[in-house]
Image 1 (cartoon, rainbow, N blue to C red):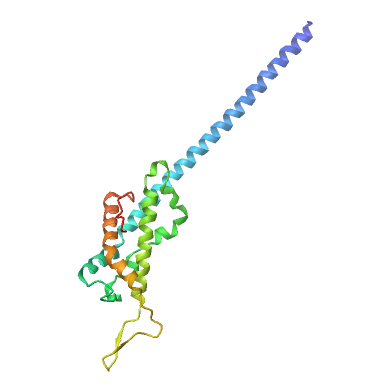
Image 2 (cartoon, rainbow, N blue to C red; image 1 turned 135 degrees about the vertical axis):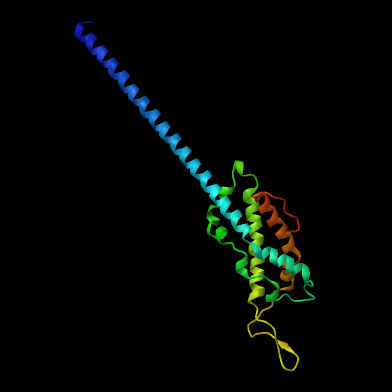
Amino acid sequence: MTGLGKHFAVTLLQQEAQSSSTLLSLFVGVGVSFLSAILVYTARQVWEKKKLHRALITEVGEMDGIKICAEHMDRIRAPPNRQLSADDVPAEDSIPTTVYSTTAARIGLLGGILGGNELEGAVKFYSKVLRYKSIIREIGSQEHVATVSNGGSRTGANSMPVSDSDQEDLYNKIGMLNDVRDKIIRTESFDVDYPEEL
């Protein structure tokens, strides 16, 4: 091989080594960028989960209407022997559900491998809260029964009574829901035992 041939072969080897080094650097750079993106995404999800969890637990603590309703149901006769009236239930806004309603699209953050039964518990608890809040709203919005001068009674023209089964359900189960609420507040977790009847 002549001097020029040797020089050409050495230059070619150097260029090949340089290009493979550049290619390796490119792959390493892409890999590091990808891992960094995954770590940032994971950290952001963990942070969002903690914020959501804290906000939901705080909201549960503010649901004083559940406790008020449960205590009142313990003091009155059971439906259907007695129809529940607006005086028997707390104000609807004493059972806030704004955080849950506005973050429903992100509630899945509570799940996952490390989430335990947080997601299932939160959905189950809030489903019951929304059901009983709806019954309370219906009872609270009923027009009061007015006593007519002849001793009879009448209801407003558009007043529809709340069904006996809904009233009985509220009467019988709001105390259990209050017990679950107390457990959630005490443990700061939705992963608590729920009575089968609830």
